[in-house]
Length: 255
Image 1 (spheres, rainbow, N blue to C red):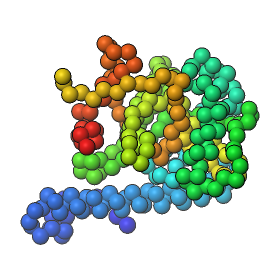
Image 2 (cartoon, rainbow, N blue to C red):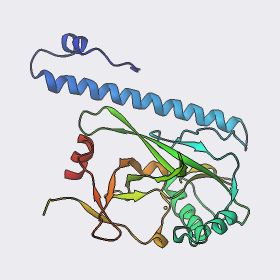
Image 3 (cartoon, rainbow, N blue to C red):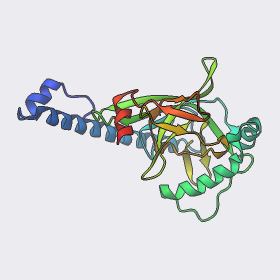
Image 4 (cartoon, rainbow, N blue to C red):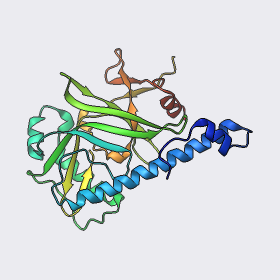
């Protein structure tokens, strides 16, 4: 399976007929990217099996997400936290209101979509452990040239001395996408289910933020790419989407 790009000259001489060259070269690039993506997902699956063989307590290192191999958590906190402590420490933050209830509802709703048949309602006890992460790597296929692009997203209250909580574009439903503001990245182990990682006039695109109390859980597989949103100084809780940050975002916003 191809993992290294073929030089442009070799592609021209070996894979085209000398006519409509650009289209044929782009098709070769697309095939190369597809092969690389398949290779990465196979490697992620192998890594998942390796972690499973370590038992119930794998090391807190970067763990590839198997159900969609384009995202990866990083910068784990040294020790896990109890879910009740997370609620207490963030009691003044409306995004964490009813955190346990929201997590239980999300788990019971999301697990069946990944093939898990639940026989009873799963709850999050007070001593349920949460492993916080503060970095998310997202690989995605550019809509411009089909090549892989990587975004490095931070969700860190102390990123070089200052808070940094990035934005992202996610697949909210099968038909709809949405912009989100990262609040808290984490993974947790659900008993008898296995590990699950988640993680809440110029023709400008304007989006309005929902109240923090409306925070939601988003599975990492739903992340498409990072995004840049600029606060609108004249309208509270409204943001302007910077769609000219690169060609891929421009095309996604025009689609």
